[in-house]
Image 1 (cartoon, rainbow, N blue to C red):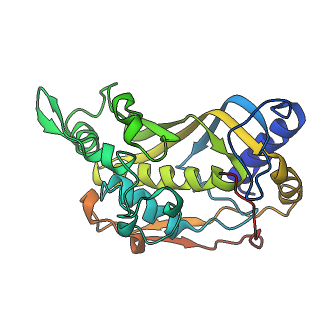
Image 2 (image 1 turned 120 degrees about the vertical axis):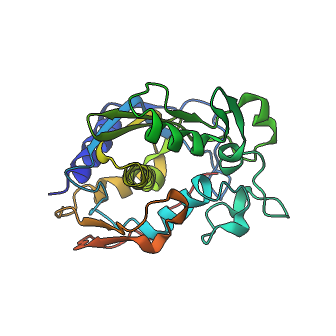
Length: 276
């Protein structure tokens, strides 16, 4: 069975059974009807995925991989903060009349910084180090830039990546300040697993571990019955990820360069309420 499914089930069971509820607290998020959106949460959740063993996509319900990849390319490859460069409508609620989400996400990836070796943005610095100094312990990115927070329409949730090469394997840690487990967990896991695969391929490395660190992993009150039903579903073997091996330049990847073979999964859960 898929190890990603087991990790997800164990995490959800732990949050529901032993998490802390903010039911008695004043909270910012609201449901569409104006009702406060309360959560059950666990602090400091750490999930580990061995990318060399399997691609960590859920079979409990579908994760739309091409849309997830499109978004990660929007941030890391296009370095865009405009929804007109994105094929989905995920970010529409946070965009202004021109389509901008402010100085957030892709904007921060495109800002150039001075180093001893020259000027690089954060993506190009990672690529430079993986090729020229792969055993560095300083290969990381961070888009939670305090001086720009007031110009971001949404503060970054997944904000920092740390890359570490061990032998010939590229490992990565994603740090996330907050996560809506039902809506976004596997979406983010798949995105940053794909990113690790891309960086490894263009750097002549193999993939190793992907570690996901979530400061505030929460399940919204109206999501609890959905999660309870979902984690009882049948689990299937993980599909095989096929990547176009002809791609040698990070900026040449497209969503069509990734294919899942034998992706057996349960039906989609429809009409999931989203708290804003």
